[in-house]
Length: 71
Image (cartoon, rainbow, N blue to C red; front, side, top):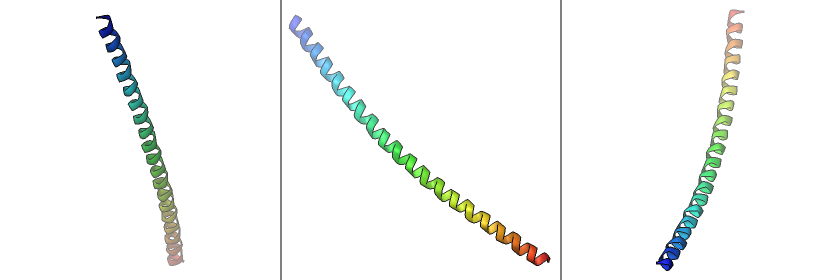
């Protein structure tokens, strides 16, 4: 009986170690994916800034054209 309890305790510890290792691996994978998402979001923000800059230039040119037409 005592041997069975020791065996089951050791088995439980081994299972817990595997579960903990799996959890650590999963956290690392999630971190890598999160880093990739953040990098993509930064790229999207850069593109949006460029678009806004171009829109501002277009508005400025339209304003110049309207002023020229009214002059």
